[in-house]
Every structure is written in structure tokens, then in C-alpha cells.
Image 1 (cartoon, helix red, strand yellow):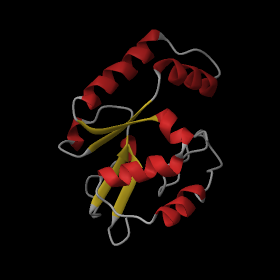
Image 2: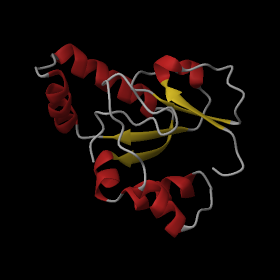
Image 3: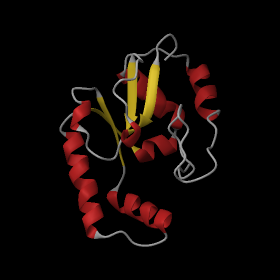
Image 4: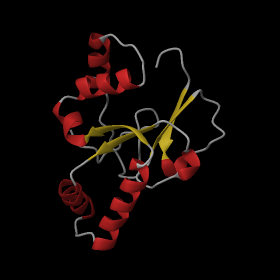
Amino acid sequence: MAGHSVYGCYGSDYNEMGKSEYHVVKSHEFMPELLPAKVLMTVRDIKSAHESHNKLIDGNIGIDIIMGYMRNFFQWMMYSDYVMSYESIMFDKVIATKMLMDELELSVDINELSEAVEGLPTPEGSPDYYNRVTLLHPRHKG
């Protein structure tokens, strides 16, 4: 978003006092205090999400956590302006990003976008660490 100031964080780190023009907040938890914002969602097959989470914790999450995921999903879905599947992102990150930018009415050269997306670093370190610019963390796949 050249020419614009952007503040990005995970929901638990959100500071609404950020002076940036745009705030990008990644949250699995429903955060009504962010509304009325433009809500962009990614969705993943619940079975795949469950299997992925189990690998992360080296165990098995219970039905209460799955129900929490579903509750948050439906709360966000009521306000969603745009929904993209996780699988489409993993299939072609560049096209998925271009579609998102089109939704936000942001123009971009596809070659520059491709270089930027393909050049994203894979974060390393603690599972609790995330890159403050990309919001990627070591547990991201792909």
C-alpha cells in the first residue's frame, strides 16, 4: 500500500491509538471493538484446521475449542465483506493477493506483486514470535 501508512498486528496486540491510516488486525477471536471495519476473512476446512492445530500442540484439541472456533467464525461471518479460502491462498499466493487487492480497490503491477509475495521471508524462532510487518509466524505453512 505504497503511499499509505499501515499498522499491522495480531488481535491480542491491537492498540487502537495507532496513528496509521490503515489498521490490519489478524484475529481468530471475535473483536466487536474493531467494527465497523472492513472485514476480510480467510476460511479453512474445519477438519484440516483441526488436524493442523493438533500437530502444533502435539495432541488433540477438545470439542470445546472446536466450538469456540465455530462461534468466532459465525460472529465474524456476519460482518464479513470478503471471504477467501485458505486453500486458494496455498494454491496461488500471488493470485490470491491480487484478488484481495482488487477487493480493496488497490492497483498493483502483477510482476511487482509476484516479486513481493514470493520474497516474503519465512519467520524463524519462537512459535510466539511474529513478523510485525507481514504478521507471519514460524508456524505458517507454505
